Structures are given as structure tokens and as C-alpha cells.
Length: 143
Image 1 (cartoon, rainbow, N blue to C red):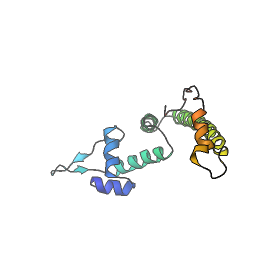
Image 2 (cartoon, helix red, strand yellow):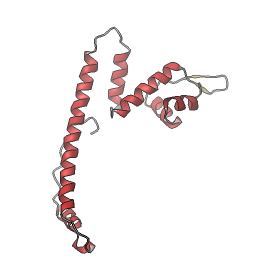
Image 3 (spheres, helix red, strand yellow):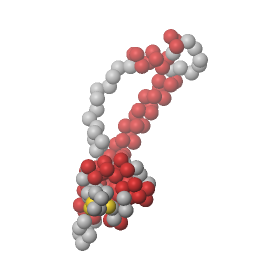
Image 4 (cartoon, rainbow, N blue to C red):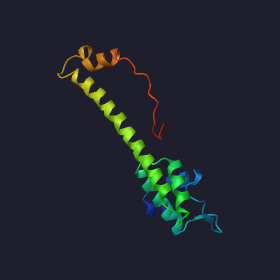
């Protein structure tokens, strides 16, 4: 199948297919005599796998690791379990960070409960007076 057909079957864009090829997540396809890319069922299966991992917010390195593990079907799934456990920990960390962010935003919102002139806006005053927190080291795979 051609790249457009693959993209359509995988419900993504042609640019996404090319991007995953450049990133080394999707193998380069064979070429036809007219130099068109020619994809097979294995490309579609792998592209769907990659897209499902991305839908779970997995980083490219995590996906690469899963693909390597998937190529060892006789091995036990300890590596897969470990990778997923680490990803769950990243998600939990991100949830905690987002919960803290929401608390800060809620506090700002409470500063301005009524319509008033912008010069009296408690949110803008709060933003101007807010001390920047020391940037915390992020412990997620997203950095």
C-alpha cells in the first residue's frame, strides 16, 4: 500500500508516518519501480502499536524499548511490566504536578470573584506579586 493508504488505515497523517520513519520507530518501506513507498501489513501493525503507545503518552524511548522487547517473543514479560510500572510512576508524578498547578490556579481565581475594572483585578495583582517557586526537578520522562 502507498503512504496515504497506510496513513488512512492507521488513522493518522502522511506526515506522522514520515516522522516515525525518521525517528526510527517505523522501518523504511520498500520502493516500487516508480520509487513510491510500498508498505505492508507489518508496517500497519507497527504503526498502530506506536500510535496506541503515544495515546498512552509514552515517550519514543519507551516505545523503542517495547518494540525491542516485542521482538523477543520467547522471553518473559518482566521487561514489559517494568517499563509499564515506570510509566505509571511518571503518570502519577505528572498528576501530582497538575494537582499542584490546579491549586495555584484555583487560588488565583478566588482573588477575583466579581466583575470590576482590570486595574482592580485580584488575579492580575496576584500574578504580579506571586513569588516564583524554585523550579523543581521533574521526574517524568517528559523532562
